[in-house]
Image (cartoon, rainbow, N blue to C red; front, side):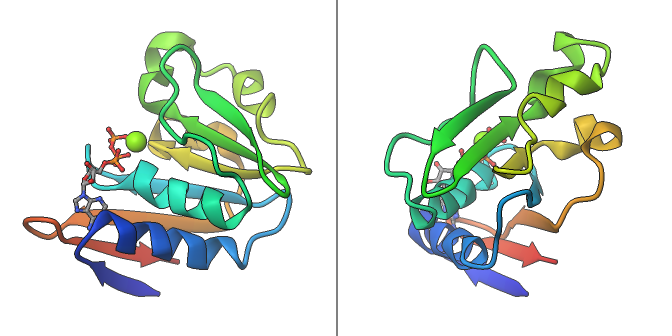
Length: 135
Ligand SMILES: Nc1ncnc2c1ncn2[C@@H]1O[C@H](COP(=O)(O)OP(=O)(O)OP(=O)(O)O)[C@@H](O)[C@H]1O
Ligand SMILES: [Mg+2]
């Protein structure tokens, strides 16, 4: 599906819509330029999965595990290159069959990520607007 949003709330709602279709073990790759709304999208998905706490990109690790109705792994691989020489076990710690996993900047760990269920791409479309392709 493709959506155009004009606010962060609308982008979060698209994340929630996708979340309704997810099951434990699913991996969603969330791509897009800096500030395109990846974390906003994931936050909306987390809310729909029953997690009400903060959703921010991790600073000192590559991921967070968040307690929703199912466990949620939220990864951001932006700094992966500097963290390790692509040690796959770094990702495996987060990707378990019980969790739903969202990965920002997945390009940086693609080889270790296996087959994703869904790919989400966000694009800037001028002031406050974003194009979101979920496929
Ligand atoms: N339609 C929109 N959808 C999503 N975010 C929007 C929209 N319009 C404006 N914004 C703003 O754009 C910013 C998106 O930030 P966010 O952290 O979600 O992006 P990101 O892609 O995760 O960034 P990074 O590459 O740093 O991880 C927020 O400040 C948000 O308020
Ligand atoms: Mg982010």
